[in-house]
Image (cartoon, rainbow, N blue to C red):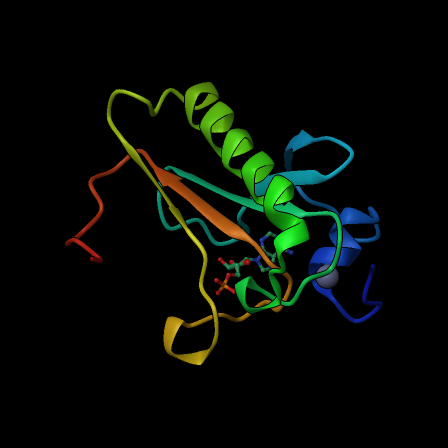
Length: 116
Ligand code: AMP
Ligand code: ZN
């Protein structure tokens, strides 16, 4: 459920400070420490999963919840009309550096180039 060496588990346990923008029983969100856009929020499940590769069918409701939290936060940040992006890096080619499942919510500037 929790990994004592995981920085995002430590944030979830309030052992490391973060600027929280959302918290419920399953999902947390906080501002990225190194923002790449005017809005850069990290959305995580409370439960420790190393990334998208750890998903199993029983986690489908949790994934849906994360999507709804992202939508709410994009609206809170005033990014609905201008647009926003939700990204999760999985593994080395994607550049994942923290191995606790997380989604980057980015907005507030045009995203340079299309990713897909
Ligand atoms: P990724 O490279 O996709 O694994 O994303 C990890 C993200 O976590 C990066 O954007 C980091 O800036 C961010 N990050 C790392 N440590 C912290 C922290 N203590 N508080 C907030 N964001 C963090
Ligand atoms: Zn963790």
